[in-house]
Amino acid sequence: MSLRTALQAVLPSEAGYGACRLDNAPEPWPEEIAALGRAVDARRHEFAAGRAVARDALRMVGHAPVALPVGHGRAPVWPKGMCGSISHGGGVAVATCVVAGEIVGIGVDVEPAAPLPCDLRPEILHGRDLNESGLDDGLAARIIFSAKESLFKAQFPSTGLWLDFGDAAITLDASGFTARVSDLRIAGRWAIAEDVVLSALWLGAEQIGQLRSLDLDIVPR
Image 1 (spheres, rainbow, N blue to C red):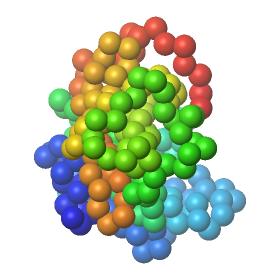
Image 2 (image 1 turned 180 degrees about the horizontal axis):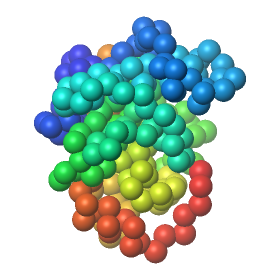
Image 3 (image 1 turned 30 degrees about the vertical axis):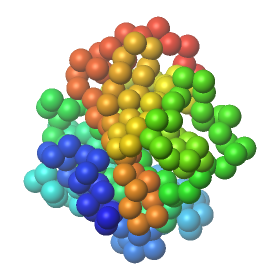
């Protein structure tokens, strides 16, 4: 499966998307460069690739490409009326966006398709996370990590909640996952393509409202 086919599989039909290798991205726009400061070359490549594929996603939904500055929590600032997400990992950058309507928050994450290192698993996995996918536990742990990252990215711009890895429980199955935050359940999707794992989920206004109303003891990561 190609990376673009995998993005189509995990994202809603109305979403725009983009993907590229980190070493194959144009320079950031002048309005974005200030956010890089004295960043090392690897970070500059990640940032540049992420902004480039985000503009590809905007074009897909009929929006002119624009600069995407850095906002609260280092999240990208999307144009008014749009919501989106950028991720990089495993040597690639991906992005997605939608015209805000029924969907008011969307998250996408990309990670290398390799088992999550054992020393990281206690930080990421908790007793409520379940692997019902048939995958080995190491790769399942990587996908669960990715799912939690997608959830964070989907909700943060609207709620400002710094959900920690223990605040969300993931049940992973053969083609999707369910994220649980308190009594709220949110469906997501995952796929593997070109040596990376992709995950995505999206939220409606009612789900955002439910998240805002939760009594969670949440601190910044």
